[in-house]
Length: 243
Image (cartoon, rainbow, N blue to C red; front, top):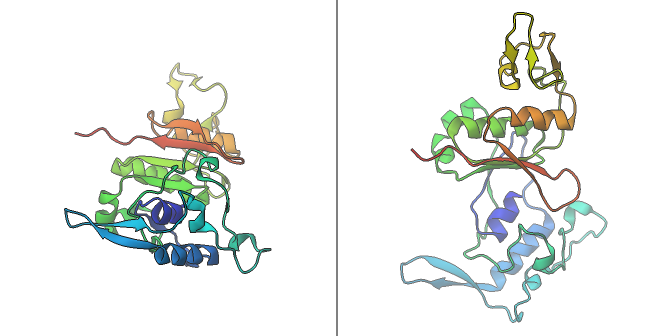
């Protein structure tokens, strides 16, 4: 997703990933090489530079992504949706190329997205417009919490739950609020500070549980469904209002 945002959408992106990166795939390198070979830099009046396509494509932007991978049997080396018109790629892809595009792969930081990262990379985080994660596995919760802590908007599309690795996640047993013996009502928000041994709560074990638990982290978190198959539920927050 970061490569798509930066290289083909012109939105500068930084990947935060604790594992060593493998770099671009073959089809991505070929796409970049082809793009660089078929564009020129145009100087604007304000001194900035803008990329301009000089291909004789008659508006067919598929020519920018027509290279084939060396190994057609390796799914990692095939360009997703190669040969399709932009109009057929869903709402996310614009119908016209956005310039200036970035002619490099996204920056990558090998680190965990935790409290220490927010301190050591404070400048990077402060300049970020949004924190995003597409099926980010164990980074889903850190993305949400980092965004809430810094007031930044976020959008995550959860997938795997990793319930056993996160026993601190608890949900109220049905119904969504429980009246205790002393007459007090306990809401899901209050469960976030309760220990895992509380008899009125249950662990987060399923995908739906995980979505519900994430949504309970802030009342402003919204949910929508995206136009693709598979895990396509996106949770998003618009960020803290400007002061």
